[in-house]
Length: 67
Image 1: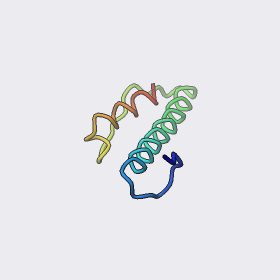
Image 2: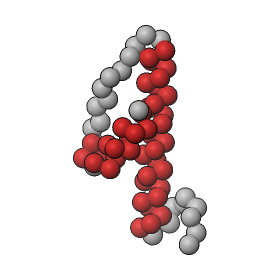
Image 3: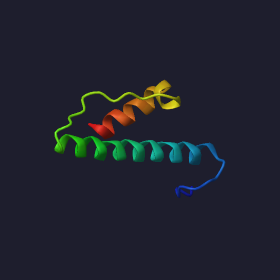
Image 4: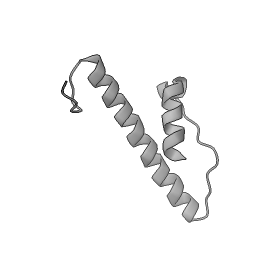
């Protein structure tokens, strides 16, 4: 099975791409939180809205990525 991230319509590929994007969003958010913390603006709560806020998996991925 080809494991490249692409725009294929197969379910496995779409799920892999979704998870990769969620992790990217989470780690990007982590950088923002870290930068704000270093400048004296600690963050202790992140509010997620939209589709990601309805998915327990998405919320867990974002929580894990942001620490």
